[in-house]
Amino acid sequence: MLIANFDGSCNPNPGGVCSYGFVVWRDQTRIQEGHGSAAPRGPGATNNVAEYTGCIRALEWILTQGGTEPVVLRGDSELVLKQLKGDYKVRSPLLAPLYWRARELAARLPSLRFEWVPREQNAEADRLASLG
Image 1: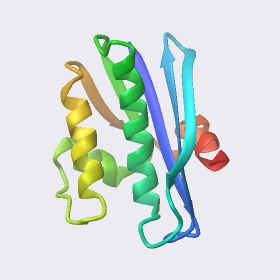
Image 2 (image 1 turned 180 degrees about the vertical axis):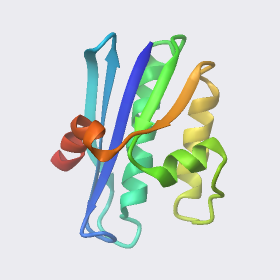
Image 3 (image 1 turned 60 degrees about the vertical axis):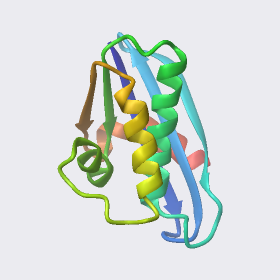
Image 4 (image 1 turned 120 degrees about the vertical axis):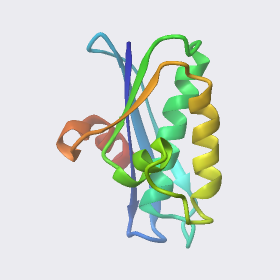
């Protein structure tokens, strides 16, 4: 089973430096991590954009590995996870394309489960998101 944690950051929010981070684990061993810029500075740079970008980058990496293992996708963004689970509607035109991309990737993973975790349990992804 793969466990992937994702996170995003925008400082200041909105309009600041927007970055993401993710970590993928298999059997308590870190097998991949990534981080980078989530959006250019300006009105499109928000924490939610950064969070979605981290989620998408984690899913993309998992799919490059074949995507056949069960996956638990974890994050501390209640908004992103509840939107992806269908509990919340996506009302923001800024987030809609990111939501649809994440859903497209998620649909290709037959055993994917979304799981919210408190910020303290998402420390590695948060650390990577702060690197930009």
